[in-house]
Image 1 (cartoon, rainbow, N blue to C red):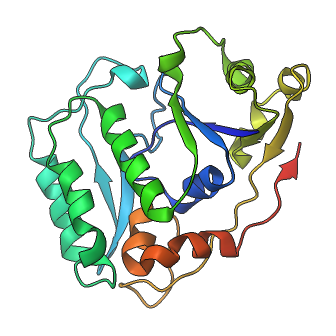
Image 2 (cartoon, rainbow, N blue to C red):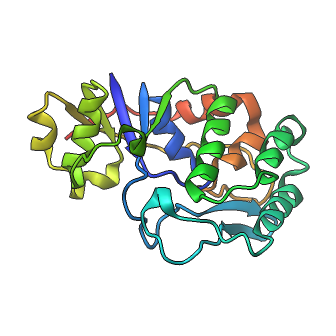
Length: 233
């Protein structure tokens, strides 16, 4: 069984879903502290003026992901949805999916993790990605730290393969996985090109919604079109 683990990013990029699509189960790492420059509460869409970063405002204080609260004192939801609508309303699949995204923005949610998971599940449904999703916090266990933590989570789910992002080579300890009978493999993501609403040149590394609104049901085929074999450690 192939397992992958990641923090619950906001409207993640294509590479995030490439990893999900290759996994049998996916664990949302929600009991760790947020990274200062990560994508937990932000991501980019494409506009006529180039990339636009959408950032969810957060309350100060908590650092552990499942305890981080959204600062709902501002009208950030209206701004985000307004920007998405303004820049994607003329894309081929806007009408098909707009209400499903809009309904999430219309909900009252206090915790960032809950918001991100709602969008994550919606995007998986649209992409027809069949993966079992868990939250680390639902196990009520201390899995340790660093790559030992990840290996223990994979072992908990009886996984025999862990799919890691390529950026994790610097801190993954292969012994943590080998000692538990888990094969450590790395995602070998190649960003596909696809037609976009704005710009003469292709703009990569955007939120998955750019692909979805432009290509709808064909989005998953585009993600898979450049897929390379997983790499060994």
